[in-house]
Length: 97
Image (cartoon, rainbow, N blue to C red; front, side, top):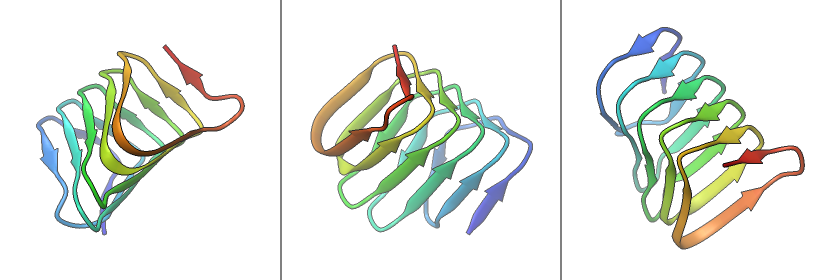
């Protein structure tokens, strides 16, 4: 599992699971078979590919696209939420804008 506690200043294509407490300033690609738990912030766009899963407790400010994975949102998503396919669950108290 990749754990990020500081600032990661480039795009990240996941090849392992991710625990984010810091910040990613590029785009994040959640790929098949991988899981991302976001407590921090992603300022780029997040793409969830088929077979990928993400749980957002923190913030996504660059938008979020579900291309066939599983998304759970407890935190905040701005910049648009696009659902091409897959399952997206928005929990009470989550903020989408």
